[in-house]
Length: 134
Image (cartoon, rainbow, N blue to C red):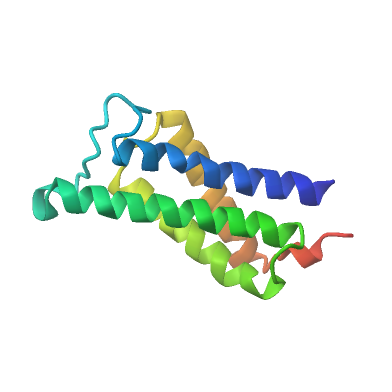
């Protein structure tokens, strides 16, 4: 049961990044105060490059966390766990740093909490899904 809960949290976290992708591509408005700009990138690279960077970051996070959920339930190789967990959490946090108002505040706090919990579990405690009882 715990395996399913962890997989659901990871998958939900990944799907949550679609809010940033949909708004960066101007398909939907998730946070009306965000116009797709980045406090770091927009002035230097322009809106088109900024939009592309956001789209790449959010897409990578979506697929990365979906793959992590698949690893937890045993659909993908467990050897992918650590690099994918670290990479996905870092990509998500870079997105949150570059686009801090992309999501509603509560969603950003939740995303940061999941990313930090994952990094602490993987790097601090060397946790892997194989540690769960079958």
